Picture 1 (tube, rainbow, N blue to C red):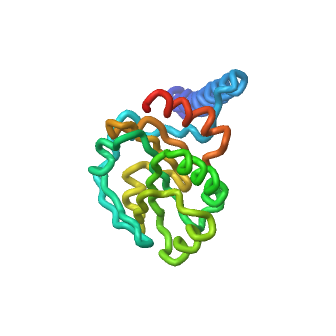
Picture 2 (cartoon, helix red, strand yellow; picture 1 turned 60 degrees about the vertical axis):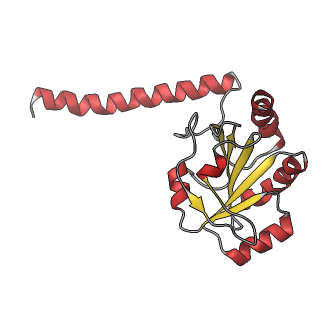
Picture 3 (spheres, rainbow, N blue to C red; picture 1 turned 30 degrees about the vertical axis):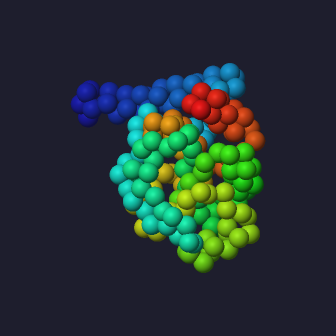
Amino acid sequence: MSPLRRRLLFGIPLALAVAGGEAFYVILRRMQANNYDPHALPSPLLGKRPPAFALPGTNGMQGFANTDLAAPPKPMLVNWFASWCVPCLQEAPMLAKLAAEGLTIWGIAYEDDTQALAQFLQQNGNPYQRLATDAAGTTAINWGVYGVPETYFIDKTGIVRWRYAGALTDDVVARYLNPLLAKYS
């Protein structure tokens, strides 16, 4: 075996171990500073408009397209959910509370059955002013959705300012959403 090949065989695992150690150190520092959020996944949409799409309505509600999000009258949320999603069920009371407080929420049902969706909304309430369905899941891919629930905050100019992967809770609303509403309202 040549000396160069021997160095490569030794150097590659060493480089991977160093990179892993650095990533672990960054996570530890963020945890110590109380600034670590595993739900804060990167999104290519932050600071941009949503990608082009047009989704039909479902359960007697009006669907929507990216052009409908271009200049909403006030900041709003777009919430991806599904009737088969357990965290979506846990999130339902918070969405109802936010909607009752006057926050505009539009929903996109991800790869869901119409009857199951109707039953979910009947049992858990419907906080959505508009409700579209992404039966094929292709719009979700274009948005960069990792899974449901996922919520996007869109400002009055139609720009995505925040994305949260997971169920909205009191803590998430207090830490992230309320400051955004104060800033962009």
